[in-house]
Image 1 (cartoon, rainbow, N blue to C red):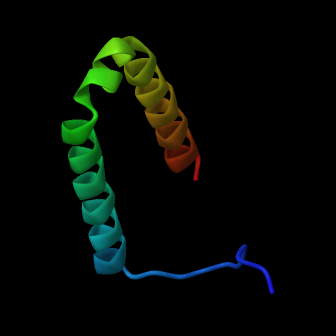
Image 2 (image 1 turned 90 degrees about the vertical axis):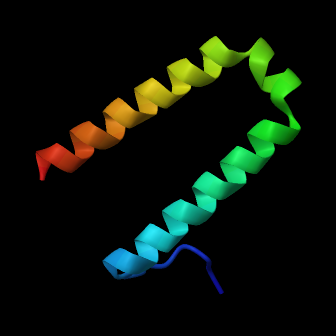
Length: 61
């Protein structure tokens, strides 16, 4: 049994998944704001780099 399978989701299922991740991120950020405030530049840099990567992959197709 492997967890790495190809899945197909509809647009609304992906929307629910993104909403769930956003909600979890907000809760984690509120609970651990002292930890994240020390490394704001690191997290901002990671977010920008990964966003640019996803945009480049999306626009290549």
